[in-house]
Amino acid sequence: MANNDYYDILGVSKGVGEEDIRRAFRKKAMEFHPDRNKSAGAEDKFKEINEAYQVLSDPNKRAQYDQFGKVGAGGRADQPFDGFDVFGGFGDIFDSFFGDGAGRGARQAQRGSDLQQRVVLSFEESIFGAEREVEITRLEDCGVCSGAGNEPGTSLETCSTCKGNGQVRRAQRSVFGQFTQVTACNSCRGLGTIIKTPCSNCRGGGKERKSRKIAVTIPAGVEAGMQVRLTGEGDAGSEGGGTGNLYVFIDVQEHQFFERDGSDILYDLPVNIAEAALGANKSIPTLDGKDEELELPQGTQPGTEFRIKGKGVPHLHGSRRGDLLVTVDVRVPGSLDDRQRELLEELAGSFNGSKNGNGDGADKGIFGKIKEVLG
Image (cartoon, rainbow, N blue to C red; front, top):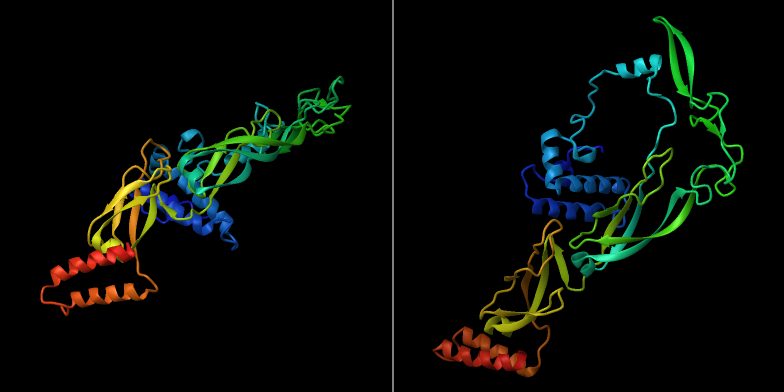
C-alpha cells in the first residue's frame, strides 16, 4: 500500500475503540466504494481501507500490528519494518554463484489466484445474515487427465536432458574460481518428465476453466464494503501449490426508513404538533417484525431521542445487539382547514394571555380540541 499506516488510512488515532474504528471504516468505505466513486484510484483506496479494517477490527491482529507494525501470515508479525534489508542483498550474490543444494531453480509450487465476487444484500439481510449462491468461473484441474496433462492411458517420458531430475548443473568461472550453478531444465521446464501425448481436453496444460455455483453464508451484522473469505474456492494452484481463495464483497441496499450507525439502527418518528404537546403512545416498527410501544411525554421537543435496547445490529464478534434510536420528528401541517386554523389561532391567543387572565385553564381546553381535530 502507498500508505502503510492503518490508523492513518481510516483517519483515526491509535487509542480509539472498536466502535470508532467501525464507524471510520463505514464512512471511508462509502466514500471510496468503486460502485459509488468512479474517480481514478478509488478502487485502490477502497482496498487499502478494507485491509486496514480487517486488521484493526480484530483484537489479536491489532495487538500484533501495534507491537510490530505489521501482521504477517498465520497471525505472526513478520518483517516488522518495511524497506530494510538485513543482509544487504548478499543472499542474491551467493545464490547466483552456488544455487542451493535443495534444488533451487526447479519448478516450484505456486498458489492459485484469488477470485472476487460481489453480492448485494437487502438492509435486513445485512443485519440478520443470509445464505447466498454466487456463480464464478475458476481454474480447476482438468477433469479428463486430473491435472497430469497427458492423455489418459498414455505415459509420461523421462526427460533425456536432466534424466528426470528437473535440474541441470552448469559450471561457471568467476574471479573466485569455478562454481557450479543449478537451474531448472529447459526441456521439461523443471518437471523431470515430458508429455508426448497431450490431453485432448486441456491440450497438456492440466487445467481448465469451469463455472461453479458456490454457497456463501453471510454473517449477521455485516456492512457495505466488508468481505467474506471462502478459503480454497479460488483458482487451482500449479505444481502442487494450494488453491486460492474467493472473496465476496458486500454491498447493502438502503432501507425505506431505517438507517444504520455502527451497531445502532436509526429511525425518525413523525409526530404532529398535538402529539408532541400533549404526549402520545406510538408504535415503533423494528427489524424483528414486531412493533415496540413508545410513550411520548407531554411537551416532547423536536429532535428528542429515545433508545430501545437490543433492537439494533448484532455484533460480528459477539452475541450482543445494538439499540434502536428513535428521533422525534415533529411535522408542522402545510395546510389547514378553517376549523384547524381557528383552533390554532385560539391556542396562539391563549399563549399570549389575550383570551382571559388565566392562561392555564384555557390551555387545557384548547389542547383537548386540538387533539380531537389533529390527533
